[in-house]
Length: 222
Image (cartoon, rainbow, N blue to C red):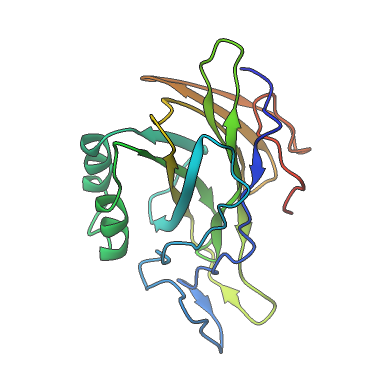
C-alpha cells in the first residue's frame, strides 16, 4: 500500500442521523430510519473534495446477520450492485432506489460492514479521498468506524447485528478501480482493507486506531 495522500479529506459527517431501530426513546428525530434499520441518504458537503472526485453520497443500513470481521467491497458495475442487493432479504425501497440511481459510467458503490452489539450503533464515514500512487494507480480511500448512536435517554436491547454504509463516489472522469479502506470496529481496533480487481487483503492494527493503509483525517471521531 502507498502512504495516504494529503488530498484525502474529512468526510464531514457530523450530521449523521442516529439509527433508531431497536432503540427506545421518547423523541423521534425527523428523517430517522425506518424499522428495518436503514436511514435516508446522507447529505454531504463536496466543496473540499480532491479534484478527481465530483461528489459522494452515503446510505446507512443494517442486517440481522452476524458479521465476524469488518469488510469492504467495491461495486463497479450494475451487475455487481444488483447481485449484492439481491442477497438482502426484502431490501427497503430507499436502499433499492439508492442503488438504482447510481450511474456506473461516472460512479462506484462501496459497501462497508461490521458487527455491532445492538441496533443503536451505525457505520460512520469519517473521511473520503484519493490515495495517490507514484505508478498512477490511485485508490479511492475511505475511513469509517462503528459508533454508538444512543444517547443517555435511550436504551437498546443487546442484539448482535451488522451495521453498514453504502458509499456512492462520483468522479470527474473515469471511476477508480482500486479501494483502500480503514474500518475501526466496535472494540476500537482498526482493520485495513485493500482491493484491486477481484483481490482483497486485510491488515489489522491495535486499539490505537493506526493502520498502514488508513486514510488521512483532520481528526479522529471517537
